[in-house]
Image (cartoon, rainbow, N blue to C red; front, side, top):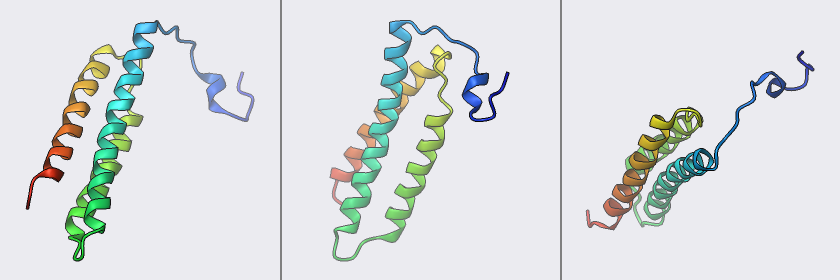
Length: 103
């Protein structure tokens, strides 16, 4: 029965294994790593004498998209979690690598 305070009282119980918990947390951290990489791009661009607003806007948009994708992660979807871990870890490496290359 709803208590009128929170929707969490309506959630079904879910038993997490240690493996599922670790995988989900790793997926969240992978997304957060990509967010951090874009934050570093923004910071580096803003520190320039003549920052490129397009670079900043693109990185801000990417961070917003990542936040949406992070919210859509479901701990019960093992395939989604595995794919997210790989995808976002690779994305973070790519973004960090592109930041280190001269333009």
